[in-house]
Image: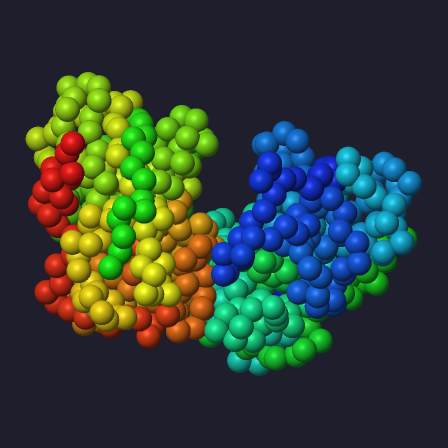
Length: 291
Length: 289
């Protein structure tokens, strides 16, 4: 993206976490939109077979987290891990057979989510340690004071299409436009942690539940209309938030594939360009991750 | 006809909440400005049913007392089973014996919101024990696709939304909101949560919105978890006031949700009268065993 930033002044820190186990309670089942009980895998562990560019609702799951789901055991350390880690940060596996292999952060979902090549990911499991080069929080676009940037590494920003245009707005390429009716769980929470679940994304439900968003892909750049995520997440007419789809299907009603927020500002600060190829899957090559 | 004989009444104990804070006193509003939240739980004296949702510079303030339980499972059960209109009785402290009534519920901190007469409110203290005769979950109307929940059978029947033989709920409401205004609470199970309306000023044409008002939310299916569904309507009671936080705002405890074909909304944005304190307290008194 052609844009002037303060990237040279940002701090890079090494933060570590571990692949967290999938968790359940004694009941196991949850209910879908129609009250139907379901039991499906989802959060935690290492989720294979889903990567940036894949249809987010392709797999039968609930809150599918692509790749590695990473946390830290100590609460304060974990919050720092979740808050400081940004999309596009490089992740290196520190233990187990894939030690030394690398991937990249695709978002947060109360876990840091890490995509890496399938063959390397297949050798990672619960408890394996990872280190992350955390950089990005504090990033500003020097010619766009009214756009708040968050959870965005300077490398990803550089790789995104667009930039400051001749009228002073920010050209941003997005694969999909998200209407405010789609905003589900995550509303009202801080926007440096977890993500925003999208409704209207349920391929198995009737058309009354649809907002035409069943074909979102992991890694898609999306524009959320009438959303202000500058200081949390909320409805605000005339504002736009830009996000990266970081989680897959959810059967729990009011939940769904979710974007992690990277930008937020008044609508006229952006020139949104629909571009179905706008996806962060280019990061593996850009970052030259070691596989 | 709803059949109240199918519901069960369970006495459950809750404790009056304290005002609580983390070590960081500030919250951040949607403009990035810090503020110290007031009225978010505990015992709020100067806020009554019938007051405007924007009457106080507070955060999620609710009339009456917020009640929960120190055991998380017991708190979830207390909130899930408590219904609007349930009778509550103070068991300890200076207000022992006083009767109150459930106004609604709030998620996140698992809280039941209970109204008492002003003189009683002055006597109640944090940690006082309150027993709630919980009843209402399981209420249903076999003629209707809509689900009824979070409301006592006595209160629901007294509201007479439906004439016998008809398949239509006629609901007097202050106004309706589109589902895009629903913030915190979306995607959560409705027996445990209210939903916040992300409004920071009155909608055009609406003279005021009061605590106790009945409002409708369009394109929202709230039978289980609340979520977007075209052509569905959810109806609830306004139970707490506004919030400066993004994604938050006045709260609605939903008690009825179904396809729009089963609803006629009688909107009166100027003169609507919803649930009143006198009506709710009289109802509670009538339920005393």
